[in-house]
Image 1 (cartoon, rainbow, N blue to C red):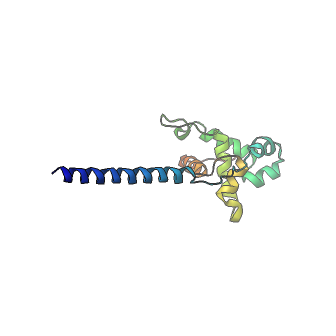
Image 2: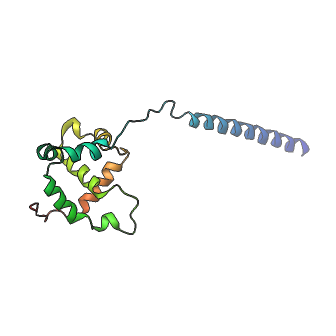
Image 3: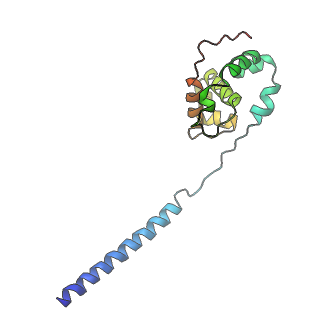
Length: 148
């Protein structure tokens, strides 16, 4: 009986050593999961410094509505619960969300890529644009008269 317990103890010790080694190896692998991460340069400068200075024609070309129409839409949606509900997390300004949606709907082809839009607006591309699009689209905008 004593010999059997010694063998069992040796097997348990070997299993523990193997599991420890596997755990150490897995920890090492996970610590180097991203061997090289590049920071994607983004800036809100276009949105905050360039867009407000564009003439009416260029503004409309980028946002697809006139400035006055943008203001009408903004005023109609600004108090909607999707932007202020009790479960709301911290959000970008409503004007930014609206501008992003209108910009996104106004472009096509390779210019419509999420990564290009995120770089242009200086926001994350890991789902932020999709969340903004869904949020703004939940507002019932189909009855908005665009004439101020």
